[in-house]
Length: 622
Image 1: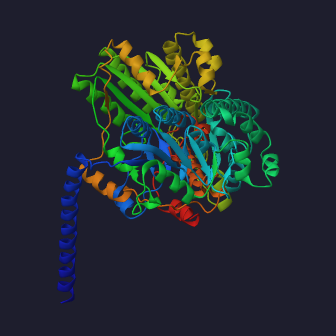
Image 2: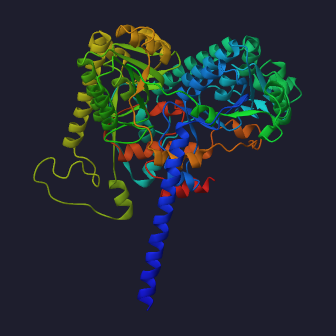
Image 3: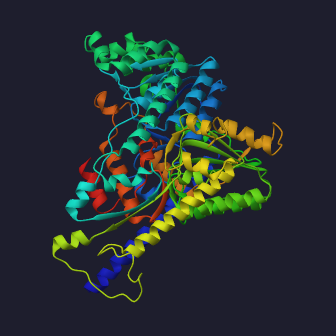
């Protein structure tokens, strides 16, 4: 009887699961229909509650994990935010735009400058742009500077730190564990291996990092000063002596920001909401008490068009095989280009690159797919976002024209590899490793006893071969001698301004300039600039579940204090560190990756898995 009872319970469970699946499918179809017909948008203030990060291409949401509350930080697509603002400036229903940056976790400097330009367009249309945050960090203030009104509470602060900070170096830890990091590289400045071979920065890495940081700070200040001229003198004073600026205001960071003209109003959130009610009208039933147009609802109302210019997004780490959005998987991207060519309607390609690189083979696979498009007669323009370095630059080399911004991080033309071996670990544990060989490469690379001289020589030869290829394709792209490219390569990372001077990019601009250049090269008319994004969107089922998980929760929740909003969350730092280590130890041996570019990426690289030891560690951090 017990056996029969168990079988009956199993059948009941299967029946309940099937009913649940059918119900979810039913509601998924309803969601798909409703999503295709967006709900009407009323009059009021467009509320840009930018909780999370701004990225080039959001990662695919695991709908089941999202429904369970494990979706991670929210990611806003850069092009969607810009499209929303451009529509809002001409939309009579939108009376003003409000930015809530209390839970804003940042974005790349180039991306934020593009959003700032869109905010300027809203202001030029005569509409107020108001922003509120408890604490303004580098990224938050770069956006806020483009607003008409900047608000901060009495206990809030503007605390701009600028680029810089500390990196982690693991040589001492590896020595204690007995792990040997066997490294291979070409390039004097290719410092991606240094965390595993040193306990501090090499002089070459410090020189490169300092020059890059100084250049990015100047670009950041130029953007802020253009957007908010009245803050110019106060900004320099604050950056030079933040402690003195606070002391001069009696120790109040908010009053210091006001006196330096970094903000316009010191007031609490209730005061800010009252101001929004003045701009857009009162609505006592809405959060904040003002007529509110939710960002997600407004995004759904955007028109989706297609056109003769194909857009290929190469965002995230370049990896082999297939993967969802937010990871530049070679086969996925190559297939999207091939499918786009089969449409027969494309006249040009724009590559939107926001990647620090990754696998050499994957980068080459993408490059060949782009070359195939050129053979079909399509002009190709590369548009670099926040980061287009190492493998990110490799995939840009087929382009007829390369466009970047002064704050773009690019270059890093170099190759390296790291191969861990555990002979020291085994010795500490009292474990031996022995065997036989039939050829010099039998059992190589030997991770237990360490690679042999022959294996080391072959791996180094592979690194040098890829570097020679990198120099050759860059020289051909830039129409320069290989020796000249070699002098500016060597793994060195460049800011976009310097890269243009060196000839690594052709001009400055954002996606608008790239689209215009592609249309010019393809001889398209002004009315022939529609875009076809060559990427697969989520199906209706996934979209339904993800929509349930990510539908906006209107909330006035704020950080505990100003300083809580200024530094990256511990989870973010840990995910970045663990992700880098995991990629080095389990990824491809030879990499075209700018490891040091991670400090300037908008979001930490996605972990391969959030189970096991990684979940435990992140759980301990809250």
